[in-house]
Each structure stands twice: as structure tokens, then as C-alpha cells.
Image 1 (cartoon, rainbow, N blue to C red):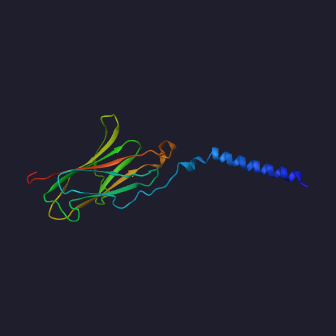
Image 2: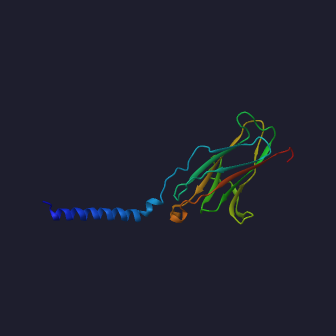
Image 3: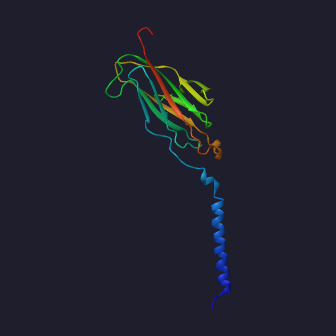
Length: 189
């Protein structure tokens, strides 16, 4: 014969488990949906070779950046050679970093491992023809000779403090664009 009490207890337990599963599906643990980890350090991601008077531009991929107390580091280099060819005249180049303003990020730029000297000299917010806001950061002009191979190593530090750990900043993309303009330097300039 069937034990009605045991059958009733098994049904109660089954119903309780089904209700628990439904509740977890409807109300998941919220914090786990907004946390992800990524490593911001990498080897040189972008290299610019200045071989003639020209305009160079490249995007730095920030990936899924999340608020944290550690800095995100994005290295790139600017050289007067590409391994085979070298500049044939003295060259001046100007470095500009243009970013979107979607996230409350703070930037610093260091050259040739001098971490005591942030080389960003001007930091301003600009708008384009469509009213979109951008942050434009510039540095002092740099110079390359033509008698030997030269390379300047840059590290862009991006700070996104953990105090901004809020779902409001989830899945927002920030674009960073490095722009280099160069020109020949004539003797006497």
C-alpha cells in the first residue's frame, strides 16, 4: 500500500524545489550579472612608423573595461624606422589622443618609462559637427633624427575607479583614437 504521508511529503518537497528554481530564474543574483574580469596589460599593441610627412591614426581597443582600483595600461610606440627603412630627414611629430566621453575615465600618458612625468599638456572637451562630445589630449612636439634608429615608447594609463561600480556603466563602450601628424624639419627651424 501507499503511504499517504510520505507521498504528501515528497510532493511538498518537489513543489518547494520547483518554486525555488522559478524564483532563481525570475530574480537572479544581481551582482553576478555585472562583474567581469579583464587584464589591461599587454605588449605593444600598436606601432607607428614615421617614414614621411603624413597623418597616422589608430584605435586602441579598450575591451570591456570595468571599474577597478588598478590602472589599465595600453602601450604603443612611435619609430623613425620600420626595421628596413629609416627617415631620410629630420622629422617632427605631434601626438593627439581623442576619446569619447561615454565613461568617467581619467587618462595619463607616459613616454619612455618616465612614470613621474605625464606628458599630456592639454586636455579639453570638443564637439563635432553633430554635437557629439569628445575629449582631446595633446602633447608637446617630439623630434626624430635620421642618422640612427629611434623609438619612443608610450604607455596610456586609463583609470576607471571602483567607486563607479554601478550597473549604469555596464556594456558602455569607450573609443580611444591615437592621431599622429608629422612634418619635415628644415635646418634653421
